Image (tube, rainbow, N blue to C red; front, top):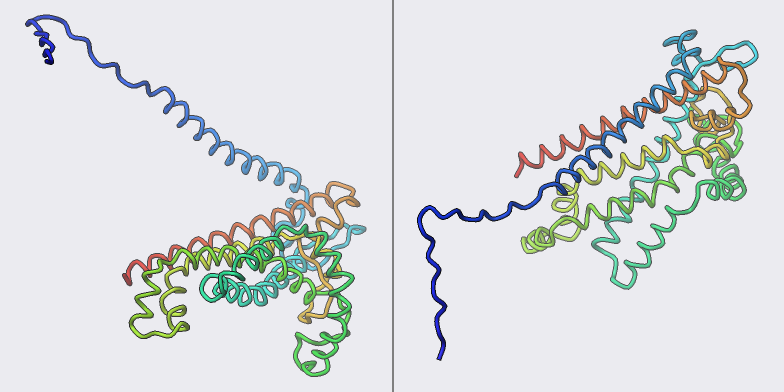
Length: 326
């Protein structure tokens, strides 16, 4: 037999204890700490810009905007210009993207939709391992293995059959813009492939099944349903690869030839901003010489910033277009 517990009656006017409010001290500390980390990153970026501008000020003060259009680089006479390095940076990155983007997108589509399960994981692992190889090792391989092959038979054949085009004129040196672009493509393929594969895999399976249920072929399903859905992710993958291509140093320095010239020929040796700074900074003497090299670094920073802004605008535009279509 259970006895009920007598109810305690609260008399009128008796003070009652309020429930203790949960402490928000931890939330406030966490919020302030994350804010500090975010501002600290911006502070590092601002500090880098300030220091680089201070160190490059002698060159900025002397050359002004003519530094961007001049083709001279003469440390003896104190004449410096950035145009050949800017040209080499953009040209080698463009060659690398032209080669890497189709290969990377094809690999990503194969690994996400077409590859059998027993092949998918090993291939993905090997591609991601290629991204972990240090650039100096890839540069050594390019110098001793790839460059002789590029010189003969690739450049020899291109010069013999397509020599009427300015792109394929001149003697086949092996080192030059073409070799730099190919070595960049080798380094970009695993990065673009990995990011693109994740973007393609993020497309819902129901969307694929719906397209196939309507009678579409696998090719139509991929081109009309999968790729438009993950377009923003694919653009981000390409821009991520482009950022890597613009800033790559050691591998490009080993195979580009380090000649400070403007030439339309892909066979010609050239220079990039990163290779120029890396190859000459230890030998630089005098405020003007060092300032010119640091101003080159500022130019590279500006190029990467513009590229990232354009990439962000492209991603926003593709997302807004897809949202309007839906």
